[in-house]
Image (cartoon, rainbow, N blue to C red; front, side, top):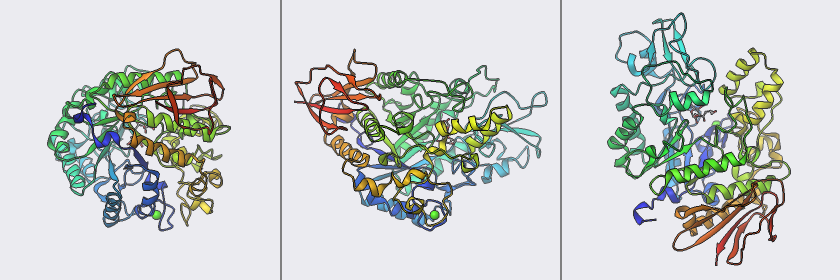
Length: 551
Ligand code: TEU
Ligand code: CA
């Protein structure tokens, strides 16, 4: 890889903090910035480089901060701007970086812009959003929200509908309007001039709408997302303008969250000469299993589907694009429950998945608690859940006749609150997350799975992540090296090499509960890291992961 292609944000590992659930410092049951500050050494010791912070701006919390009512203010429940400055300094003093969550496809309906926009037909803020007359006594078209129901909300005051691809409290901003774009560029400069190191851009491929607003011809929500909502006609024009006017003037990292970005269009967003984004959080593997009506209408999928997607994206990026590699975040179930075995092989499978994340080509991203092996929760009462997506679909599916207990089982599998229960710090009340009543119940298994416990167990998932992160820093072949998958291995294995002119590594992963034959000639290799203490010959044990280094 040429020197010019080497970038700090390719060699770094991201750790995502969902602030509401990370650490509460003042006993109100809500995680906050001072709580994060109290854990900066914990993060430094783990060995992560960049913190991606989910939104901490003013918000009515209809979607836990992804509905912003003031882009320039810290929500008081998280703390003050002085707390923010202290956290940023604390990260930079430890050689770490901070990227913030940029949510500008939509604002909150409580943002001043929207309050003015909805006040009358002819004010200067009217076309900050999308307003349309209804059709045949209903919404302008058949578009559905990601979170159930119509994507249009009727507003009595001016007798028109406004567009919201998410909840009705998240009206979509009209990027056709240059004033909206300039408002966004101003807020970007505000945070960048404070010294942050970049942005994760929420649903960025949705910002350019197909202005004919024709009905979607697709049955499945994911098809509408990909072909109607995403990758609109001016999306690259807008992102390039953002790059030209703001992004290129700072030494920062940008990552676009990409619902609807598939491997055929991915490079258009991140090609090194495109003047757009540095990398993508694509969701192809994360949307696997989402049936026609979304995640609570599940369909089966296999590891072959997952591996196919990783292959496609590696080929699509080539040497001039870049992706992030991740298997969970604040929107998807705990990776050890979804992709591993959080029962009989929680330790082994969590370590195997860690090995995959940290040895495929891309910037690895770890979600809070994954380093502890935290797993899905299974509340027995729908009222214990907080996520608006869960409650909207609970209402929709049960009104259509689904048995509530059936829906609850699907929430256990696919709900976003699986990853939003409070971080497990120790085995004291509420897992040491808060001295008060947590905003959402703690997963009862915190007594067995918590930071204090893993820090006292040399065989823990935490120390495996720490060893992998250290190893990866020492061997940049695992960052930049070519990726080649071994052919003709058992379908339960995922084996590949990473190589460049300096080193070659062979990574062997068993993504099953079985002991699987493995006949590769390993005479040229020596085991460097693995999740079993000893070495078997000619087979891989359940969820075994081994990194071999060529002699
Ligand atoms: O998510 C958008 C998205 O495509 C999905 O992750 C979505 O949240 C859904 O759960 C997938 O089934 C982003 C944010 O990450 C999410 O937290 C917000 O709710 C959403 O946008 C709206 O801002
Ligand atoms: Ca608090």
